[in-house]
Image (cartoon, rainbow, N blue to C red):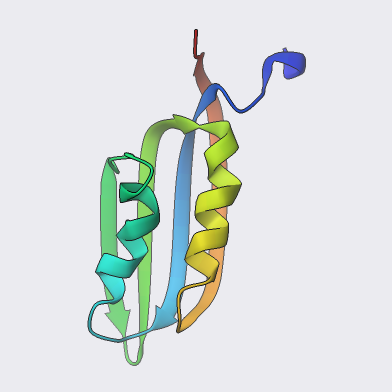
Length: 94
């Protein structure tokens, strides 16, 4: 089945971002998803002192976009760390 895991496969994905707390940070975190017409199924953020930890999860997104979104998140000013986790294959796009 791994031969079929290409950019058209849909997978569950979760992104965790740790960044310096600043106004507008959450909207900048959501931008990489919005520009790809992806709507997150979960968005959660907590502030711990001067750091915000944000989590964004999607039940299904194209496998080929996971690394692109993670890369965009890492380019946001103030971001200290990005973790991207891919889940199971939801389905293969036709």
